[in-house]
Image (cartoon, rainbow, N blue to C red):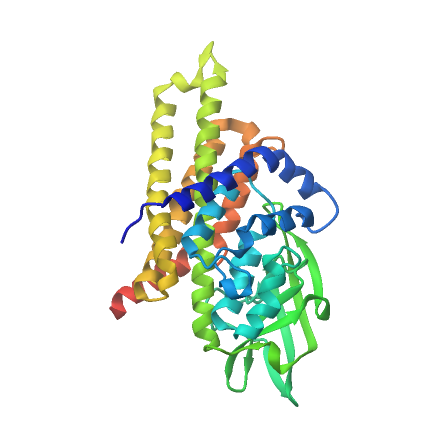
Length: 371
């Protein structure tokens, strides 16, 4: 498999990187986080649509670019470098991929086309209270009601669930797991503040009626959900890789400027060794990130292994980098005024989203046994 980027992919990554540096700095993240509203700006989301970033993985028939997850991963990497708050991971990946993989052409046109233009956003409501990460761990129910369905249950910590125009809900029907596209205004939503400054929602389904044509049934729902969560995990790794790079650079800059005992602390050999350890972990993360985004579209055993290996490195290596960055900054690193603390918190959130370390270690072992 060729892991080299082509010219178009390099240009895409540079365009997103330039956007982050010029138009969406960490200071913008702070302002949006502290302001009233969804925690991101609709005008910027629409601009992302105009730039074509929201269309990347979707078919040309619905206004998409027809690309792969490699391009999606490159975008997420660059967005992570400056903490761009718009819900690219939550909407394009977690919300969009169920419709891409499990929806009919008509459903893709109906639900993806407006999001591609930046007019709407999406969310995936899968996780539930007191349940872990397995795709089949769903207690919410879908009961047949004439030609449609009635949904009951509660979904926890839904990324972008507080603002999404359409929410893809996983619920158990009499014929097995189902995925249903529910209008955001049809459910009861409790907006939650997350540790990383983003917002999410608890979503309550209390007799929510859904028309028959809102069920995504082009493929078996559990098969689709496994692939969606793998794409989500790969997206977490991509964004986390961007975070790790920024934390390494920020820490090196700090070591070169901070003085103690009359000298730059970067001259202390012990701190140089710790910086090298951070660099090594970032390079390891780069390797597994590259393989994960290149393989995840395959949807096979090899892809699942690559994703779980990458998520494990994010949990171990990514968190090592973030913790060392805090340590080397000293007490200032944990204050809200210090940028490094914002990156640390976002890394912590990404490590648990779409499967934590324990889940992916266990799954990797099970996949190896099954081979």
